[in-house]
Image (tube, rainbow, N blue to C red; front, top):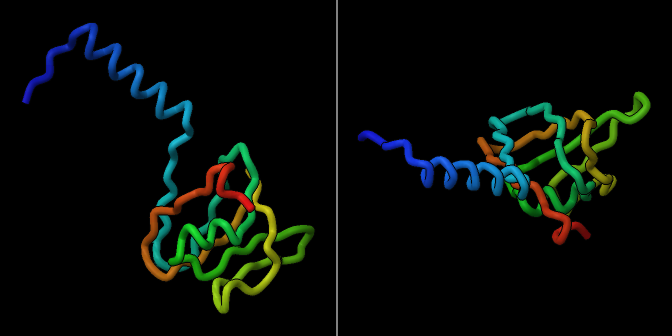
Length: 109
C-alpha cells in the first residue's frame, strides 16, 4: 500500500503527535516477575491507586535511605501506602506480563 505525501496528511500526522505528546500517553510494559522502573510523571500518586488499576501487581517496593519500603497486594493491601514520584527507582513484581496503567491526577486519593 502506498501513501501519498500531502500537506493535509503531514499536518494531520503532526497534530496527532502533538495531541499524544500533550496528554502524556505512555505505556510501561512489565514482564512476569520482577521489574525495575523509573516513572516519568508530573503528578505523584499513592501506590494503592496503582495497584487498584493493575491487579497483576503483587508487590511494589523501593529503597529510601537504605531502608526498603513495600506494598503487597494481598488482603486489600499490606504495607505502607507510600507516594510514588518521578525519578525514583521502583521494583514491581507482577503475576503476568502487564501493560502498566498509570493513574491520572483525578484518580489519586
